Length: 427
Picture 1 (cartoon, rainbow, N blue to C red):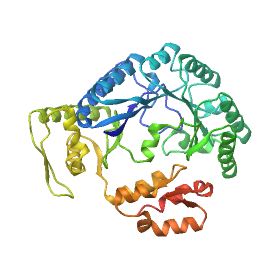
Picture 2 (cartoon, one colour):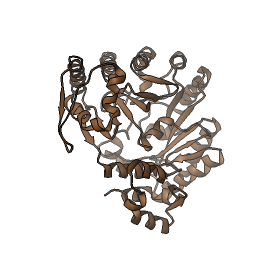
Picture 3 (spheres, helix red, strand yellow):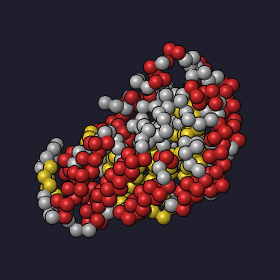
Picture 4 (spheres, rainbow, N blue to C red):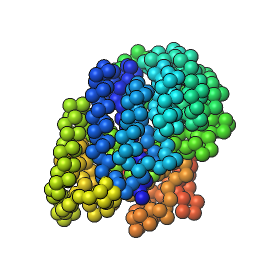
């Protein structure tokens, strides 16, 4: 069976942070109930296509997924287990903001099989937190962290941000020291990006941000401090204790199959990419179209698809496992893409071999282990040197990339200018 990862988007939060451009916002209890019911219907209808996949990771992201009642979180996981083959050692992560998960909710998470918690801290300085619109302070984070440990979580990630308005080298160092002192299993450390249209972007001239040299020093301090504390950097922005890398995120960087459920959620299965609608009303229509489409399958209606390949016809009947072959067989990719378009999905894209190669390189190079050139040859029936000889030779000569056997990876200098390196692998 092929491996599959599942992403669940929960687009609700108490209040949007000033830097956030994610698909999220406040909602009433009624709006959340309506959304969860749509989500359950989507999961149920789509599960019939993945009979030949085993789920190895599930990730609740947002927004603030911990805003949902633990009952609703449990219902979502129950629906997934009812429709999918789920691995016994599945990694299940839920994102949590301080103050939104009380002791009982955290204990329920453990009961439901959730075994990884990701807490959005960002900074241990209360003034820095207030400037970026976070709803919590450092003490409330500490309480959430303590409750999580008491509930039984032994795999916790903490999110941090550098380059915040008013942040100094000293305050960032203190944040790192405090977080390391808590001994989490994983730390994600990002630099602030001013996204156009966010309050922080609109009011950027009223804040004093760290300058380029200070931002650079924070970046270097992250790697040094976390390395000395026993965390290894396995991806550009992610550090983990041995054996505690995020399995779900590595699926993205290795181009594994994943399906996203919920508002605006993205998916990629068998080199077909698609996205759910961003508006609640459009998403509701999309779910209704999925249900109508699946009824058509049960009645034996044929689906016709035309594209860059010759016109294909798929007659989908039988058990969920048999229907799983609808995706499992590459020859059905164009048919599957057409079905996605007909049921209201957005940005449906059947990736060309060249686009697949590009993703293989620039996503895989995010990992410190780099890309496996033998795997590239096996998958594409061509060598990476044949396609990217100029880029590989140039970056190797510049000391930005190194080759060890069949592994090609960025050097520390290459990681520093990774965006420029990645861009060179796009035609």
